[in-house]
Image (cartoon, rainbow, N blue to C red; front, side, top):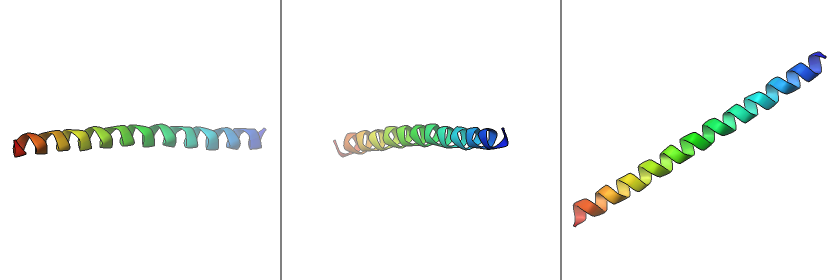
Length: 44
């Protein structure tokens, strides 16, 4: 029983971390796109 419990915690941690990583990645892409748009706007 204890092993199942610890395995479940590990899976939840990995799952949570992957969600967090995906969110950070999406935010990073958004920021990069925004910066590129604003820099091209400033060039024009």
